[in-house]
Length: 292
Image 1: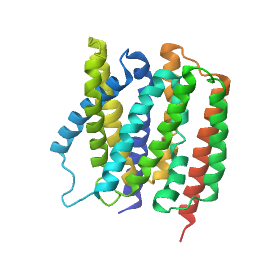
Image 2 (image 1 turned 30 degrees about the vertical axis):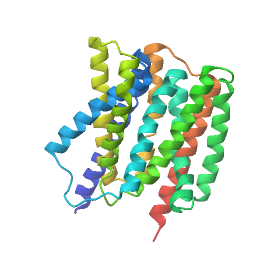
Image 3 (image 1 turned 45 degrees about the vertical axis):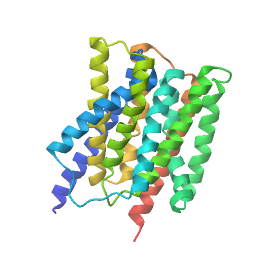
Image 4 (image 1 turned 90 degrees about the vertical axis):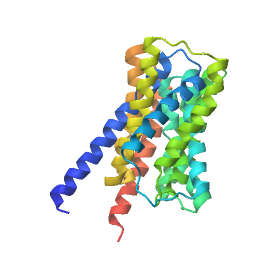
């Protein structure tokens, strides 16, 4: 492969990750705008995503012969479905900025959980990042003490932890088809969400139907496929660095449309968490490039 072709592929991969981050960043806004129960909303979005992903698999089936080990497949799917539900619930209880910033610490939690689960020892930058993340958590939690926002912040932290654990099990599927875990996760979310449609029936209006279709097809379906494509041609660390635009854009859309403003302490905490992830990612990228 020529260097020109390789550069074009890398640019395409970087562009795919950037578009994916842009689509993902709209999630918080639509969660705020849709007056549905968060579990109902998550289940409906996943139902649309399942249909969309199955149609794409019919058009372009995965390579034959790829098999996923059952335990990491189901573990990754269950943890990703837990990530979806906790993120939706957190967005209803706290600010969109708090929810996405607290979730964004997932790579740091993933590095530590990788140590416990698959014996991938963290490097020094992960420990420095952990200190920055914990400092960011303290700043964000300070404003929410004694309110529903505190519960929302706590659920957002849990969201980041289970998302980090999901990434560990997803790495165990690198020789299989990780897309199966994503599809299975949406099936789980759709099944769990169905009873909530009866308990908390959503109001189906033209705007709500269009919103949930957008969320299922573009915001999670297409965005996930673009992210998976980008990971095939650029490193996971580089993808993570590009993807850091998501937690910056997410609260911006909410601010522009709903005027929801994060506090100064929350902004400082969010900056600390994003800095931690970017710092550890850059150090890891340099280490990989210098490795023999």
